[in-house]
Image (cartoon, rainbow, N blue to C red):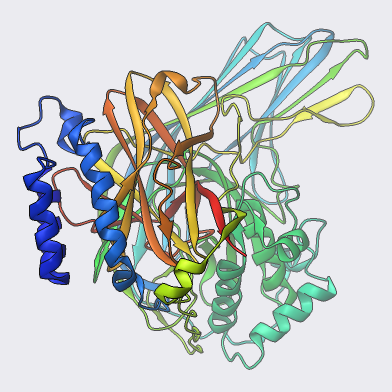
Length: 622
């Protein structure tokens, strides 16, 4: 708490002697921060629940006077293309468990598993060792095949439906990501391709590379390009800037992604593949797993931390005639993926790459209970070495895109400045009538989903059914830790009289209280405290599976927020165990708009590659 008092002194001293007198007056009234040492770990960074809460509300009134000076500057335009150098190396003990619970009236049950293969590219290598696959009970029939894409498929079948079927696949994967300078002279337009590679140019139901809208956009974006890297960079940059991550979307194909501007990893992959194939560049779809072990990339202004959910993921590989197949994750990286990726299956689209974890069965028509499948992924990092460095470039895209250094001719993407937030005079502010309901934030997430059983049953015709692998992954951060604090930026373009702040949370239990702190922005990081919500008892939040909105009430204060940047952070006391759901990328805010720091640190120097799900509700002016 002393650090907050010191911060207040610095801000007050900067703005005016009058504010210093106001601060002294508050001390005379006895409304000051408690100087006693904390008696429990949570109090290290949680504001006490008596005088300190009163103090925060009074500070909100003080800072309201000076907020216009803090927030009157324009939001800067930022190019977010980062050149990444260095390497990653990991030895991973990967284990996938699947449990099938039997249904009624089932005549035959079949499960297919794809065995991960070793893979080598200029930037990413996966060496697979010590593969072990077991079934309990033993299948009545087991078959090993290899499809036309080189995927090794094990198919196991059981007569009827055992009460439980337990499947366990373990693999040792040695993954290496090397990010040295890549040199490519592949021309654009590309030359003719032959053999099996030609198949990765064709249009499919999910990759509509022959659709007029997709062909026109791809042609416009690549016009004048002299190298294949130039064309690829332009197309991937467009996808990064024009598609926001949403899971689950209504559809997964490229055309839906283009028209809606939203989707999950399948949509990013299908749209990128469609645009690239439309201009003659072969692309294949990759299915695999991502692991939730984070890694850090230092850059000029701090640390960027990257983290994926633990579960199934889709990305792409692009064919260069002088490089071969090179991996891209079109959500945020080109020419590489990190050592946290487990590559399993490839094909022309995700309808084709469906074999891993595919459960099929035949069942009598009057059967009531269908089989269920629960999938559990774990990974032990036996070794993990990271040495990376990022450098922000002066060209686009606007959203985050990581790339190794490339020696090739390309046209840098210019980024237009963002318009500054509107600025109002004091007379205009006093005349505002806050009458229109207003809701803003990163609003879309899979609400009330039980991530233990995310799959749905599909009819395969007649009395045949199937369950395919699902890309619905739990992406959430444990935010009630005594080690790290998290904050999310909110950028308003309209004045707002704030009533509530909602966070997408799951309560795992424990005891204590939660609240939301609201901060002003200072140089792109949380700054002075504006106010705090009413407290919420953790026992009032459901512990049933899934994430849902938890609203924190600001109606007692109703702070008036002018256009600009603000920060919200979850505060707590006691020992609650709470996760806050996040979305890959930045659907709403800027790249560095999700911050973290150690509880004893002053500077919010760490930035995260995702965006927490939040909503602000209240009223705005007509």
